[in-house]
Image 1 (cartoon, one colour):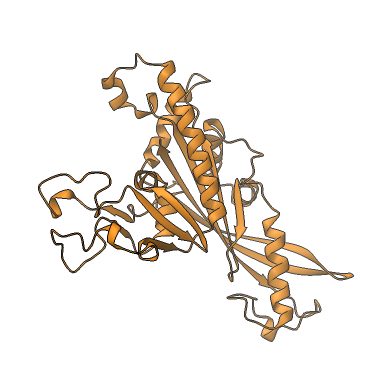
Image 2 (cartoon, rainbow, N blue to C red):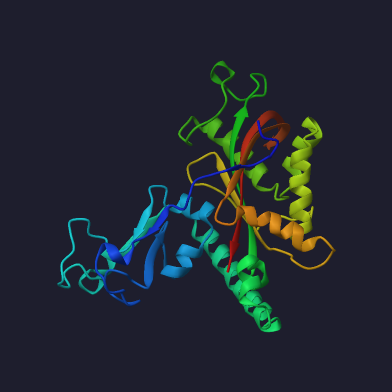
Length: 314
């Protein structure tokens, strides 16, 4: 078994259709079958996004947005004609919308950070115009702004002691969709609120390190803190998924390539996660006291945390 605390995960869920599949001539940016802009509906909030921006988003986010994949090209799978019947111009606005089960607040956070990184990257290129193409091809960090993407999926389970004042059937965990009796729903709501307030990124992993004495996990934290994070950083986005006992968190930071003597060497290690997101999963159990009216109720709160680490270049 590998000592690495993270493992590689799947390839990009987005496929850009090759032009050779349809014709010998390259399509223009606004050609009907290859729209330059896409309309996304994220839980009722609409986004107009450039196709290239969508493709450049972190793969760990794209695979959540499009779990069944998304083919960027002509949407009609019955065949392709020379007429304009399948063009975007002939479709209604509703027919062009791609519905995505993804939090619009999270998308706002990611797009805003991408804009900041693009501005920083352009300033970096203007400050170092003499960087040769040969060096840039060998080390893309010399002419691209890198972003470290850290995403956490947290699924939580509340084990209710039978004497805590809550009726519990056979002391089973209060898990699953929020469809149970009002008392159990209240427990899950209180647990979610408690976890939502725990915004420090590394607290849970450091607790696991202290428990298991895992050197590889400690090295992971050290590497991330040298590369742009700080040990007291908080998640940039954190919220409970609707109708689930699940919390999703994302933090983005710009990769540091200058500073201490080995800064670039550490940054180059993170290039291993460029276009190759990696994942780590562990269980975290704590005893908490939830405030319910005048009483404090002890709960055993279990959380399955899944981290995905990735590097993107803009």
